Each structure stands twice: as C-alpha cells, then as structure tokens.
Length: 422
Image 1 (cartoon, rainbow, N blue to C red):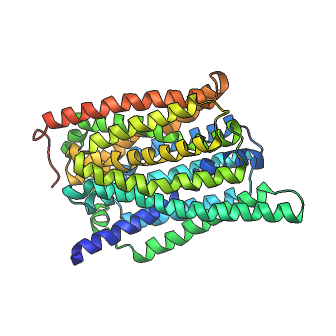
Image 2: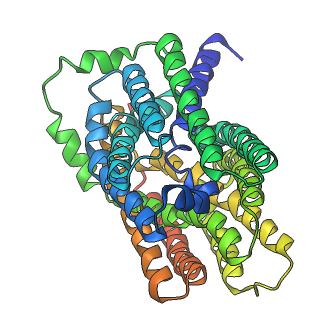
C-alpha cells in the first residue's frame, strides 16, 4: 500500500472511530429499552416521544449540516460534536426528570447531526476514489459497527456485573446502578475520542479556507435541487432507514413478547451489533462488485422477510428461532446502512456541492427519525404491538426495493447528462 493510500485509510479509520462512538449512547434503547422505562419511570409512548423530539432536531439539522460542512474544518466540527454529546451523557446518567430528558435528547440531536453528520460523510466521500466508494462507505458503517459492538460488549459486562453484584449483596438486583454504569462508560468513551480527534486528525484546509469565502455557488445549488437522482437516493434512504429503525424495537420485543431476561436481551442485541461490521463491510464490497442499488435493494428485501417472520411465528416457538432471525436481520439491516450512501457516487455532483447534497438528501431520507416513533405509538396503541410494527416496516422495505431498481434504471439513462465529480 503506497504512502498516500495509507494516509487516506488512516483518516478513514479516525472518522470511523468518531462515528462509532457518537450514536450508541443516543440509541441506548436498542438493548436496554425495558430497563430505561423502569429506571426513569416512564411509559413507552413517552420514550417514543423523546425520540420524536430527537428526530425533529435531526431533520432541522440535516440540511444546514451540509452547508456548515462546506464552510468549517471537519476536525473541529467532529471534536465539538463528540464533546457535547459526552456532556449530555453525564447529565443523562444522573437519571434526571422527564423534562430534562427532553433537553438532553435535543442536545444530542443538535451535536450528532448539525455539527457532525455531513462533516463526517463528506470526509469519507472525498477520501474515496470512484472505484472505492462502495467499500469506503461499507468500511465506515461496518467499522462504526465494530466500534459500537466493542462498546456494547463492554456495556453488557458492566450491566451484568452490577446486576449480579447487587443481587448477591442486597438480595435484589439494582437496574438503576447497572444502567448508570453503562451510561457513564459511553460518556467517557465519547470524551476520550473527542480528545483523540482533536490531537490526531489533520486540519481540513478546504473547510478552513471556506470560512472566508462568502460567495454562494448558486448555479451549483440549483444543479443539486434539479437533480432527480438526488430525490431518488433520498427516497431509498427513507425506506431503508425505516427498515433499520426496527432494530430499536427488537430488544423490547424479545423481553416483553418472548419473555427473555434483561441480561439475555442485552447479550443478544450485543451479538446483533456485531453483525454491523459483517453486514456493512460485506455490503460495501458486494456493492463494488455487483452494483450498489442491487445490493441495497436485495438487503431491504431480505430484512423485510426477517421482520415478517418475527411477526408471524407463534410465540410458543423455541426462543432460539427468534434469536437467529434477529441476528440474521442484523446482517441485512447493516448491509442496507453500509451501502445506501454509496449511491451518492451515482448521483454525479461536483465535489464543492457534496456537503449540500448530503444535507439535502438527509433532510428527506432521515424523516423516519420523526415518523418511526409515532408509527410505533400507532402500532402499539391500537394495532397489535410488535407484530403490527414489524409488518408495517416490512411493507415500506418492499416499496424501497422497487425504488432501488427504478434508481438503477434512471441512473443508467441519465449517465453523461449530469455533472461528474471534479
């Protein structure tokens, strides 16, 4: 590997560590939903409303995050994001009131999207060559999953150890202390990574120069807004992200519907997270070999099948069957997440407009951050709980499959009509 390529991969790994550290705390419900409800004394609908508030903050921040990533150094945007998300975690560990939780989730939403999202995505896009786009985005999501899985494994050890110790000493397990231990671990990890980014990531010279450039590239912006492929990628990410949102309900499904213990659920969901590096990297390499839209569409189809199986298999079935389906769903879900942003390479926009394009696509693509929690309130309130939610999500995934193949057809027809990266 030549020196220049080594530098690009080193920078990529630093971005991967940052991306893998910032979101697990925000989505702690993945493995600890029932414990969070118990410790904070809230209802599932209230937890869903917190994630709706988070989603609104995300959606508001996505579009300007593209603009800010074109104007400021990625190094300091990432450092700022990690530091303030960490502070929110330390506050969260105090088990504050519900109103304080709303403020914490808004803080998390702001600093994990407005100052972070487009900055880290743009860095990956610029680090990759056209032949590497699939694998670089696959490495981003798969590597991020590897970091998340390592942190999840540490979290499970902390959670199980504190639960066992308090159960032995006091005769009664203490989920509050166990959950606090997990939250503190994630918050400390974020702080450490913020320091590493500040020390080792090189200054983004283009971003720094952009601070003093006030001239707006109106023509380039119009090209982005008129590019029909931008909207199709947004629609694909919208459907794919809806499918990936199902992961946040799988832990609760296993515990409340199947009757699995809290520690066992945390363990299964930790294994689920280990599917992220497998699914993300596998999807990325396959995307470069057989086509990006083909891999995204195929992964959505297989993930949808897994969700349908979870909904229709009788609850009396062997619990191991549910474990296998959940883990398999993890592979396909993370294949989706690891490859849908690689479609950005087929949109063919100028490099100077990449941040804007990412922000614009994200504005539409990540609307499920608002809609999915409310869809779950509908499913759990009047339509049969997890079964209804999984079926509804699977239908959206199947729609996404058709959009993927339509995108493939349109992108071939428009090849050469749209500007290429320069």
